Image 1 (cartoon, rainbow, N blue to C red):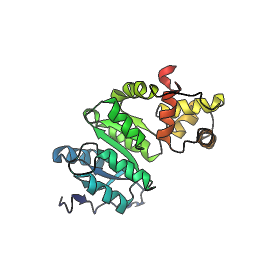
Image 2 (cartoon, rainbow, N blue to C red):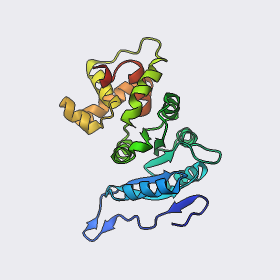
Image 3 (cartoon, rainbow, N blue to C red):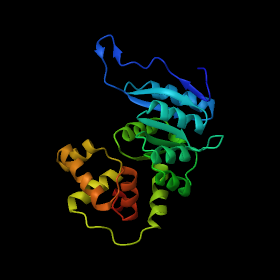
Image 4 (cartoon, one colour):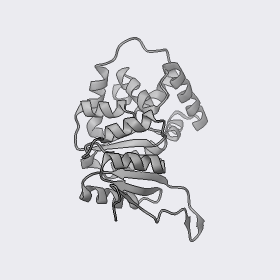
Amino acid sequence: MDYDGGVGRFSNVGLRGRSGVKPVPIRVVLADDHGIVRDGLVAMLGTEPDIAVLGVCDTGEAAYREIVRQRPDVGVLDIAMPGGMTGIEVCRRVRDEGIKTAIVLLSMHEDEDVVRQGLEAGASGYVLKEGAGSELIDAVRKAAEGEVYLSPGVAGSVVGALRQGQGTRPPELSPRERDVLRLLADGLASKEIAMKLGISRRTVDGHRAAIMHKLNIHHVPGLVKYAIRNHLTGLDA
């Protein structure tokens, strides 16, 4: 693949096969400065029929430009890349500019401060590179659905770090809203929550909207942080 300004693009991402129109895949832009790692991740994601890698980058600046240009569903970003922008900084800038691309961060580090910074920047996923196989695929799918994914290796440290900042009494949620929030924080998608609680997906979405209104938190990563700080996750069951 040729790189132009730190970006490599795929021209074979199509929506039509021999039998007609295929379901629209999850469109991904991936960034990692290590060529072997980058190529391996592209090859792995490329085996999934519901995921299409639109472009790959080797710097944070190139990743930001590509996300702005292509508006993918998900950006998979290494946290530590050369140049002026880290993966977290790209994530923060994407959020600040109102771009709807969900960001999944890749890292070799389990450091709770780094994970916390990623979530505060608005990341929808944090995947350790040592588990960047099926975990990354799950994270991409959940991020595309508006959910959050954390590698099991960092979940415990995130809980500890975020709970240190808990403060005033939280707004009152109904028992069902607490159930929905707990399952969201545990990484379940809306349809999975609906099945687990025996209610419709529309009802789940209604509860989520009510929770966001009550808490004045309007994205899922923020709800996850809130649930952890207030002991509303499955880890407290």
